[in-house]
Image (cartoon, rainbow, N blue to C red; front, side, top):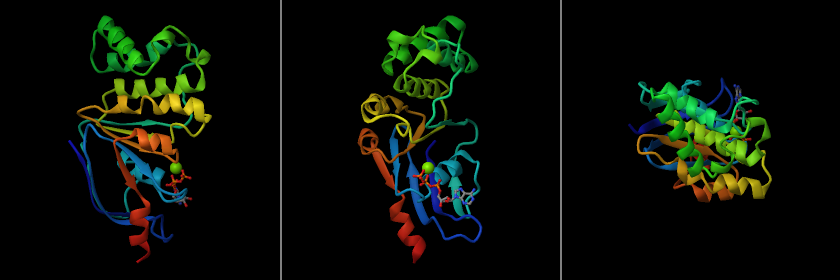
Length: 205
Ligand SMILES: Nc1ncnc2c1ncn2[C@@H]1O[C@H](COP(=O)(O)OP(=O)(O)OP(=O)(O)O)[C@@H](O)[C@H]1O
Ligand SMILES: [Mg+2]
């Protein structure tokens, strides 16, 4: 199910409008780069998409039968657990049998360039590996909406590029994926761009 924004606008209290008059449809299978200057409301819009923030005006139509999943800029996993366990767990939670969950998890790790670290503990992963693992884990949970805030912000450019290289793997037929980013290489790795700056100008008028 697509996510549809109609005349959406937000401001905090009586602060100036961040964005306004926003009509936009997020389609499944597309990975959207959400761009705009710092403070333009990217993380706020992710919060609205997650259902954590009620928009000040307008309507958001979002599937309620499945969840929204977040990936933050700081990878957080279970230090002593293996990489493959991190991805198998959401498969189990989705009802997969243990052997299937393990096999599906290993397949996902391959897709995210992590096949060689499947058995490694989370604490031993590099920053880029840990962030790619967070993306693989998020996809394993088959969310309706996948929200990713600045996935390369904590990484040096070379390490960040190992994350950008797998952004395309986030596309899923039944998932809306939105990646808030300042990183032009992350933006280029996405399949569509939503520039919040476009809607900030309307907010002024
Ligand atoms: N709960 C809140 N109450 C009041 N103001 C807030 C709240 N959350 C965010 N803001 C303000 O709203 C504006 C937009 O913040 P937001 O975090 O969405 O920007 P952003 O585009 O994600 O910026 P960055 O690129 O720096 O991450 C900022 O000026 C911020 O200080
Ligand atoms: Mg932000």
